[in-house]
Length: 311
Ligand SMILES: [Fe+2]
Ligand SMILES: [Fe+2]
Image (tube, rainbow, N blue to C red; front, side, top):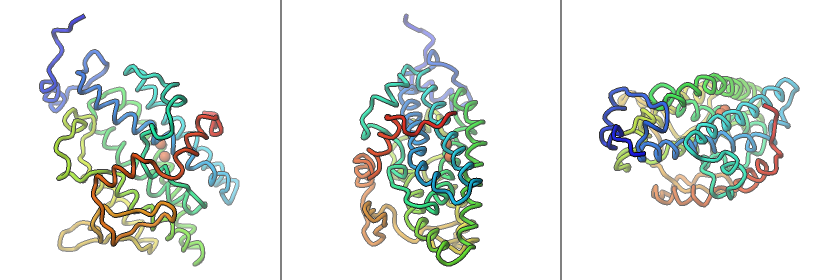
């Protein structure tokens, strides 16, 4: 049935910029639906893949209490994934196909969750760095999105993410303050995770010609705004724990600034950034598209049901 009330792409962009909320596919243009599916797929896959990434070291937590918290984080992440896949289902996708029928390289999760998390310090730093990136991204969507069902769903998700972050920060403090050896473990984790989180937010604004997700107000803040937001939230903890990171507060500019020119090469095998080896953003996108070292293993864990904590 032809819908004569359907706005053009330009009209819809204007309407959502003026505050219109979208409830269902009946109100979506093709462009809106495409942009929404894209960001929801990244979000769903990132939530889902964080579970296998966190799994092994959760079982390795140093106390029963810590283990219980870690397991509840896993449950939450699987739940967050399912919330996002359910929203995709409302847009005509098949949840089962998305989770079980795709090849590992077809998943769109962030590159950070294609990495092996090798010890408990890395796990809690992942909560401190990566869950914080999730909070920044989803917090913006919760506040600004024009897609009402996602906004509603994120109320629960954001509360749980705050718990993940608190859990991560608590343990980062404990390890950083316990002794030199445990502090060194935190520093080693931060060495690769801090730049990884910065890269996570993607192309800088001056390299992005136009951004449908912003124009349709599916999200509200640009990549650079989100990256700065993350930096402003992460730095106080880095300073408090006296961790070395390639960024500092610039009095004159009145903001945190990076001490290297993004983007740079990443040595996957050793999880080391090569700060003296600049690359282009298209190299970064190629690296993301070829997926990281743990991609196949993590997708297999999900698809074989090895990570199926009861939710
Ligand atoms: Fe999550
Ligand atoms: Fe989380």
